[in-house]
Length: 253
Image 1 (cartoon, rainbow, N blue to C red):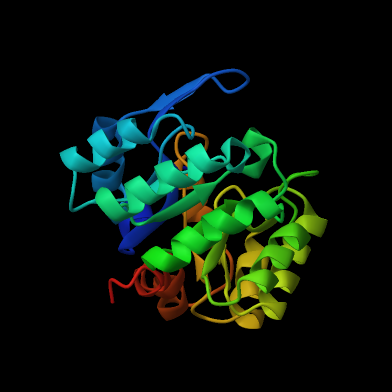
Image 2 (cartoon, one colour):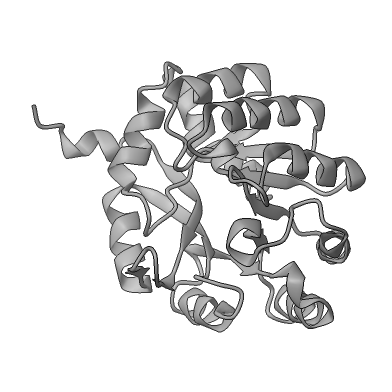
């Protein structure tokens, strides 16, 4: 049975996590600003919180943002392993270029989410009044309990657990439990396969702390949208997940 394409555009949306650029081995996928614009038009996405394809590609993200300034909120990808060079770069993009927040990918960059090397990154985010988005769901670097320890050390900095545990049921439950324990943790649902856990997180963690994302170019918007649509929430609650929660989190409402 074919699904009516209109179903995927029925709710106004903010995509809280996607990328622009090329990812090499083992993914071999890419995404550019023109494809992003077409995706946003087709699926009723008002704004995309966008990351580059690596910590060395923030200039590519800056170019995409300049091409679509009203539709993109850029996150600076920072690699804690690079030490002072990374901290200086982050300050530049947050303070001088006006990037909207911080992105960390502990799995790709091989540092633990609760490493002491992350603390200066959080300090810069705090000083600039920006949120932090952290990939969540893969051992040994990005487990929800590690992100929980980081949130405990920095309770005044809002942090988003991207993928809220990703594809592992224990890590998904752990993400919900960490968000229950620490009020500064928020959950983004792209790539997380269990629709029922979107509803559980919304009801247990809080109606304002769960947000929709796509994770382009790794996932297709129709799959990510359908998972939210089928999770068991009502229309007003779906509007929270698809749009209002990210808008409030980013200070756009």
